[in-house]
Amino acid sequence: YEQNSPQVKADTIYDLASLTKVLATTPAIMRLLEQNEILLSHRLDRFYPQL
Image (cartoon, rainbow, N blue to C red):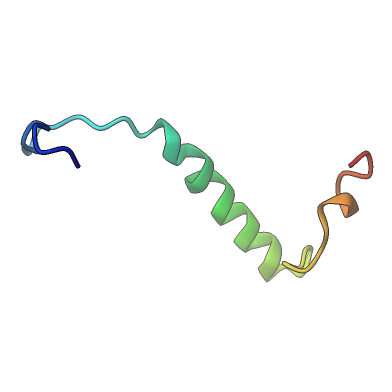
């Protein structure tokens, strides 16, 4: 962080838009893994043949 950055306070507002991808995708992937629908070793072209 930069030394001249404002101090963080209890009412500091953060931009959370960049977290949306992680917060939405991770639980969905974890559920698919639990249901044995996907494996982490699967290649993307299995799901997107045009790749």
